[in-house]
Image (cartoon, rainbow, N blue to C red; front, side, top):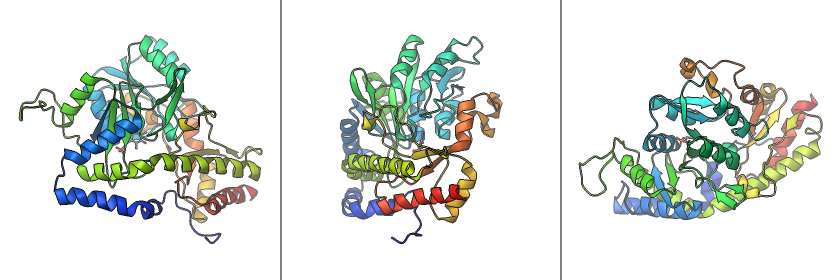
Length: 391
Ligand SMILES: *Cc1c(COP(=O)(O)O)cnc(C)c1O
């Protein structure tokens, strides 16, 4: 690689080159069988994903967004209900709450991990002036690192809240609890995952997964995924559901890729460790220009699957312009905290409400972390960042 070759933020072609035969064979089987709706490929993917996540039930759905929406629907969240969540997440977390007529109740994030801060949730729950009664909580495992589930679940238990984990960025990661490592998606009433192509386990289009340990809830989710149908009788609808199915082509792709996921997560962690070392050696950390991603549980590497490697950077927007010039992929996840989005203006959020999230939105920057990244590419990324701060 020449020293000025572009480094993309994500290179799905590099991944596909190594698995093309397996993926195309799986897709071909779906076409041979002409079985596109649910059927054996979806069932097989669900079995494999249940085994992989350690969840009792795994249900393929149409997207990560729909996993969240359907979870909240099946838990009976509706108009007037409050749902505690983070303002520093992808839109879908909060969009799914508001679409049901429920009200997001934002608690600020931890400045090191960017995940929901348990002490902020506790403070929120102590308030007497909440605009809605809290019924549920959606912790997000942002960037691939587990939220601090122990204290969050304890608060949920004390306040009788249902818990929906947004694990869209964190499939395969664990929460290191007192009883050992727990797979994400097995801690809440449901766990929600996404097969959007840029996620760690990406399909060839949209797809998602809901995990649950609860038999009754799983049966309701399964019914609601197909218009609330009765399990055995056609055209008898027992719930108000919708079309939330995972399609068979996506299921086949995801099942073909799943055996590689652990190795890909390990490669992402290795890339993260290499970046840490390169940034330390560059002097940028000591000079306060760059803050490295914080591992909440450094003794348990599996607690982070690095869907993103996110630094905090001084003069972030100028650095982005320099990286653009150098053809180095980068992105901001996320530039506007949810309470300041124009579409949620009706909720009355204002600048200053959630200062930790607002500051993070101005400073964070994701750089390439995909598994196939070479050492030369990582060195080039860090060099380009160092070059910017030399000027
Ligand atoms: C990607 C993502 C989603 C939505 O998943 P889709 O499959 O794109 O609908 C939800 N929450 C978070 C945190 C995400 O990163």
